[in-house]
Length: 213
Image (cartoon, rainbow, N blue to C red):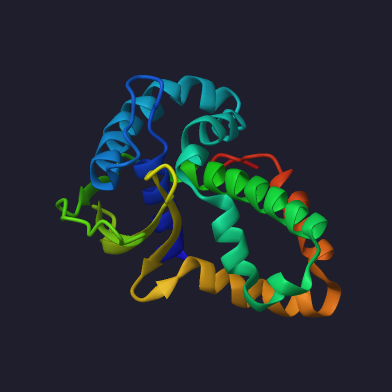
């Protein structure tokens, strides 16, 4: 669990940059990650007074800054796996919306663990023109814990040539695969709508700072 918490902190640190501060070029994935990482440290420090007063401010931060860099629909469809073909368009739409809300809330909650971790990104590599999925290695340095090595998986939009994140992998373990295993049995038993409602319920929970009741 601690490993996944570290990964969530990393993904927010890397992909929740202040896009309004300067234009971020999504067609250059390595540069994009480096830029949003730098911007985020400043954003988190500046937002601390408001966050301490109302932790739910973090949901707004994530919604505005993180989600533009996450391909929620692609991630949700991959998570559904073999169940995808058995769902209606309405069910899929509801699931994607619920999954998005769940991600916003989850990232916001884990963002409360941010303590200025140091992030070392993999140096940029040449990307073949026809390659649509890449992995970018990131080392998360935390003085209180061993270094965590994470591979962020990004997908290229063929029409816009822009890249977005859709999964993270630590020590060979995929976050999407983990969640797929967690929710697959419930989808089979209770149906996709039941899982969508559960995700919406989880997303509605207020954000709590560490140590608060």
